[in-house]
Image (cartoon, rainbow, N blue to C red; front, top):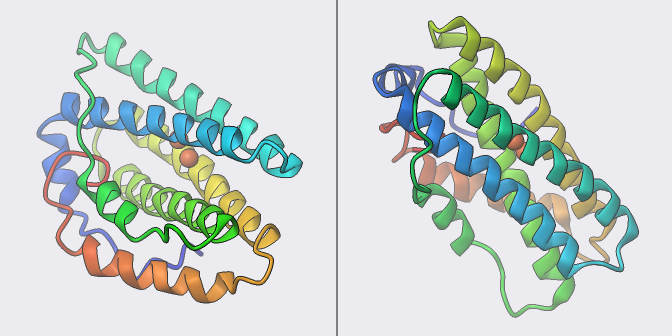
Length: 193
Ligand SMILES: [Fe+2]
Ligand SMILES: [Fe+2]
């Protein structure tokens, strides 16, 4: 359903299990960035009523996820560390088309967001299915469902506002590009690491 070309090696979960505090810190900031990104998209496209309506819902859900991760960190006596850099997302960012008009940059921003949602959803599924911690397994199963919904919404919005842009063709380019970078990852205890 997500269209991803390369699956995550489940051995990544062994690395994650070796440092739960690190994955929770990284994950918390992923949720914060997702909320901020939704709000930034609203601010840049305030005249697009459906986009504003849908992204307000997503922004609230991402903030709620941020709060849920923070609660787990507190309950376990761990500390929310500083924001981690996300080189996977930084590499995706470079693929965005810039300077080719307002519609193209909106479509690419929506596809960039859809791409991150798709991979995050897949990572949460792999975590949920392989982690031995029952609370986290259930938590990541719920988040997987939520992020799948966000992925669908971002793609739907890209199709709604595409004008003369071929979104299916551009999405295939995104999936190919993502496949070319993700093979380097799966080796550290971060959501996209
Ligand atoms: Fe989220
Ligand atoms: Fe999301």
